[in-house]
Image (cartoon, helix red, strand yellow):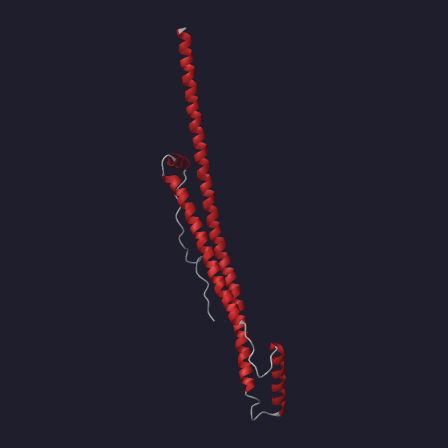
Length: 193
């Protein structure tokens, strides 16, 4: 009977020890998965910043070109109408007068207005769209940076806090830096007219 009791105690100790080992292994795998998941979220957030920077550059560059085109066209149109409203120059030849009338008819038909009226110019709406696009892309970029920093905070917390630091050290997972702007990558689009 003593042998039977001793044998039961040994088996119980072995099962308890195996149970503890299994629990530790499950915890280790769980923590390892959390660390790997956090690393992937940081990489995803970093990619999101690149996407936002690319979007800002592409959108603002294209929209700026469009706005410049509208502004140039409207400035030329308005300048031509103001010039032509003064009439034919007094020392103009017949050929100059015919050319003047031809240009006047072209402008009038091209902008769809009577010569005596100023056209309704639309560049102000395009400038408004540019301003809205600038605000939207900057907000999107700021959100991407905040998302990145939030994921870095989560990963760094796992890496430095106990007991996660044990797994992080075992897997050689290190803290990640917070977002810092690279001079070449984050230069804002220069808007000049």
